[in-house]
Length: 117
Image (tube, rainbow, N blue to C red; front, side):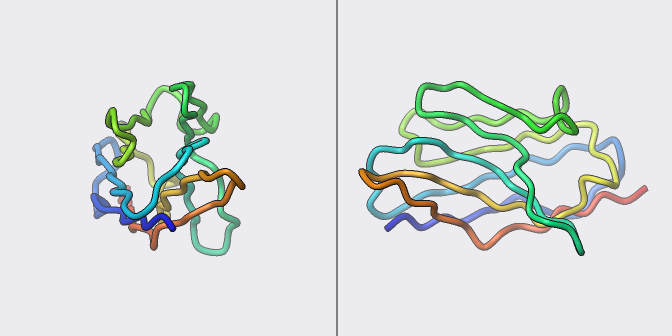
């Protein structure tokens, strides 16, 4: 069982930056991928960025060039550096880890990011 805890959210003005962190604990075995998702009010949860066990990254078109996903070497922490924030980036951001011999998704509780115009 993987436990995930996000931090780093908050209120920021448009154009500002935030760095989200996700601390992973518990039994972590065979990580397949680590991802950030977000969910804005009234909208479906969407993939923001992902990083594979091999280090390959992918981003939603809406955040390319502004957000950067990274992990520490032990893959016990996941980060999302968010620059040039826009009001439309306002959402609850969730950390996700897919791991295990039988792949299973674990989720954090989410951290609120609010970007004011």
